[in-house]
Every structure is written in C-alpha cells, then in structure tokens.
Amino acid sequence: MSVYKKILEYGRTLERGAPQTYGDKLAFKTIDLHTGGEPLRVIMNGFPEPKGNSVLEYRHFYRESYDQFRKLLMFEPRGHADMYGCILTPPNDPSGDFGVVFMHNEGYSTMCGHAIIALATLAYEMGWVENTRMGPLKIDAPCGRIETHIDKQGGRVLGARFRGVPSFAIDLDKSVDIPELGSVSYDLAYGGAFYAFVDLDRNDFELELDPSGYRDLIDLGMRIKEAVANQGPPAHPFEPDLSFLYGTIFIGPSKNTGIDSRNVCVFADGEVDRSPTGSGVSGRLAIHRARNEINPGETMRIESITGSVFTGSVVEDVTYGPYKAVIPEVAGSAFITGFHTFVLDPNDPLSTGFILR
Image (cartoon, rainbow, N blue to C red):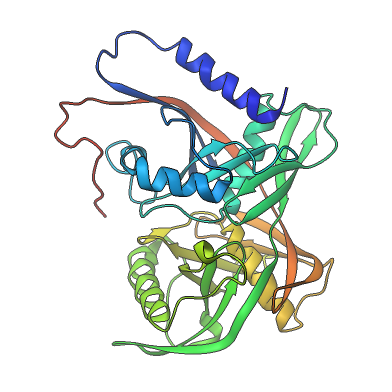
C-alpha cells in the first residue's frame, strides 16, 4: 500500500471512530507537532479531497473553495496569530509518496522546511512508512519535490533532513529606504520561497533577535517586506505562482558556542517563526555560496529565536534557469504534541475565528 493510501486509511479510521454526538457540527481531526518550537497542525480529515492534477492546483482549489476552513483551524480560538498547518494530498505523480499544501494566518505558502521535517517524522512514527525503508521519503510541495531522510536509533526517530529545491540568490547588497529608520541593506534569495535577508552586521540599526524584541521584529519585518515588495515582486524562473515575497529574515550573531548565527523570520501577516526556518536556511546557503563563503559538503548551524537549531549544508552546485543555484540539505527534529478534534458549531457567532496580536 502506498504512503498516501495509508494516510487516507488513517483519516477514514478517525472518521469511523468519531462520536456521533456532534449533531450539526462540522468536525476536523488533526495531529499537531512542533519543529524547533514552530507549530504544525496536520489536518487529517474534515477537508474534501482536492481537485486538480498537481500540488499547485490543489493549493489553488483549497484557497478558492475552502479558505474558511483554513481560518477555522489557524485563527483563534482554535489557533493563534502564529499558527501553521497543512493538508496532505496526493503526490504529483506515482513516484512520489504524498503531497502537501501549507497554510498560515495569511494564506498558503510555497515551501516550509519545518513542516517537511515534521511530516517525515510523523510518517515514520505513525507507521505510514516502514522502518526498514532505505530510500528517501518523496514529498511534493508547491515549490517542487522534497526528498527527506529520517535519522533513527533503533526504532526511535532522532531527526529528519531534507534536500530542498534549487536555491539561489537574486540580488546581493540591495538597499531600501524605511521611514524613520533610513536605508536598510538586504539580500534577496529563494529557498522554496523568496525572502529579504537582513544581516544586522551589514546595517546600522540595533534589533534584539530574542523574545524581548518580538514586537519590534514583527513591526520592522513587515515594514521591510512591504518596502521590498513595492520595488517589484521577485520572479521565479519557471512558475508565476511562486513569484512573491514571503517574508523578512533577520540574521545576527549567536551567543552560543558551535552555532554560526541566528535567523529570525517574519513571514505572512507578521508571523514569527520559532524555528530557524528551513526554506530560509536554504536561501542563506545560496547567499553564502554566491559570496564564496561556503563550499559543497560544508555545513552551518543556525539557531532560532527559541534557541532551536537547524544544520544546513550545500549538497551541490546546479544551474536553475538563469541562476547559479545550490541543492541545500537542512536537518532538524520534530515532536508530536497532540491529537485533536475541532468542531464548528453553525450557531457560533465567531464561526471561523479571529486574530488578535
């Protein structure tokens, strides 16, 4: 039985075992995890099977037809302003294991490294993938196929590592004027999603990349994102649906030995990533490779606002359209936090929820 068929069978089992006392209430079953502190709500049933022939088409289907369910499970009172989730879908073709549509407080993203690490961990821990499997788990994201490996000790999952899509730097040492702050230097790069990377060592302003700076990070991250986006959207060389700026990533030094630096990503509508951001680490590897600061086979250890760590390395150099790109590998650990049932009462005046920050 394929991995996706096992996932479907698990979802049907949940549905058959659901209590019959919900009456006219819609029910949604989820499995929640975190990777480095960043949540992932995996929606196991409640959404219809997607229509289309690829993950990008499934993403469009859910966005256009069932966005109220995204709000229901991401927004308060069932979620929060920094919630993240996904729906599992068929793969793009029979050689893949399953697909994934990512979601957050603003809509639907194109890549999410922390979610890939969590999904690979979940697939093994739930028995959807045999422990004896030797080859990679092939997950189709909107940005392309992600090959993922599990690191195990005995029957226990220690972590996961994925090889991302070709990642590349578009512009280095760009600048943008921010009101009341002045000129901000940034690099623009792609690691499955486009980010403006703001290295504090290359700028004159101070910002705390820890929980004490949380509100300032959101404010400045959103202002920089808006200003950079107003200069014109970044263009993906092959897929227009991937051509938008997803967020701002601040880079600063770590206070811990053995860690190269710290990432804090502000994405979507002001979400702050608790993990080091897998697609952001991929973009950083592309930037460092473009500056000849890292070679294939070398690694970096990057921490997050919570102190969690991803390890990133350059697997190889590739050409991707007009760009010199890299294939990145990013490793981290994820953990299941709960199995949940959420319901929507048709008489609830707050229905699909709200966000307060």
